[in-house]
Length: 423
Ligand SMILES: *Cc1c(COP(=O)(O)O)cnc(C)c1O
Image 1 (cartoon, protein in one colour):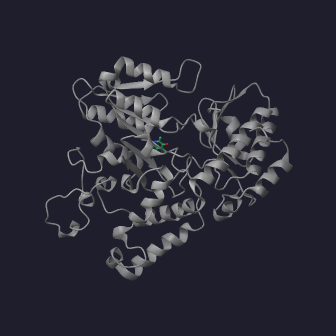
Image 2 (cartoon, rainbow, N blue to C red):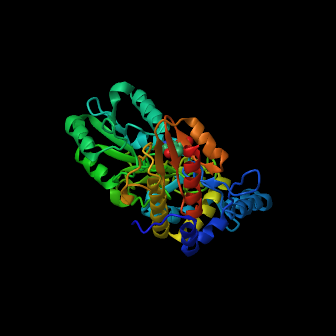
Image 3 (tube, protein in one colour):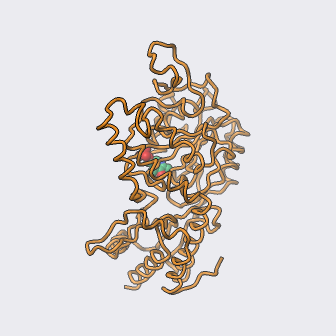
């Protein structure tokens, strides 16, 4: 791996020989007050806007202006079928079959709908395992599900914690949890890529373990979708959820994705909350028929979806389809490896990367811990044109995104960090 070299020239040469470098030009890059590109390392919070998004959204605005209600069935991309234009590309990104994937609602809403179906507690088997540093929304959702079913939220949650002095969770410790509490655990819900450390878990291993103990398994892939190869189908997980506004560049608050494993596709016994969009498409508008469940993930939809938001997702997914997740991940590993190399070359005893070193256990994000630092460090970085994310007490999260970040971005960021720390 360490063919990496120091110096500005190396960064420039890498950008020149990068066969994805042209994609940067297909994005709007935020600028500082002097009109210079910012170094944008927060694609894990809000991905940048593809320049093509505007025309995709405009197409639907125009269809609405010209066709009114007929836009549901007329025009280039009739709205009644609009979600179907997204399915195949989205399925490829998360490694699933089209019948297993649907774009609908928002992430936390999908998490609740999935728990309605896959969290089936009994008096004795009702506990939910989550990772200790789960994203707050996931934790709140789980707590409220426990309360909803009449359980105590403190008693009902089992935390998979890193060992003392460590940031990363270990599989042996999850195994130990199942050895002790396997009979009581009804659901295992893990962030596929942990938002704080960037640790990419072995989804298949977790699923096999939990299934062995008769626990349902779900993954929150908000930090995984568009970032790592998720192989959701092969993982065997029962469900997964993710948002599209992070690595999938679909705009603030845009719709989310949802995966339900094929084995549940025709299960009409599963409890679920339904609406007219879960009903058979052929007879949906007869309006007087008995409810007729759609098979697959589509059968969890409730409402007719916001098309303008879906248009933005379609713009982004078309770009992902063109690049392909394999090429993306390949560049991602190189770029993040380069970032890690430069940070290590600083030889600063106060700096520690808490993200796993093994490229197969992480995506593009590096979580950089700076001992004795405080938020002033982040402030100075921001002043210097680096957009990153600060997590208390002392961690900077940076995501060099392979679609639009460059080797020069990474080089410049580390130079700025060095200057600030030497100040
Ligand atoms: C970003 C993120 C969320 C956000 O949830 P929304 O419902 O989209 O607001 C939830 N969980 C995780 C793990 C996330 O990374």
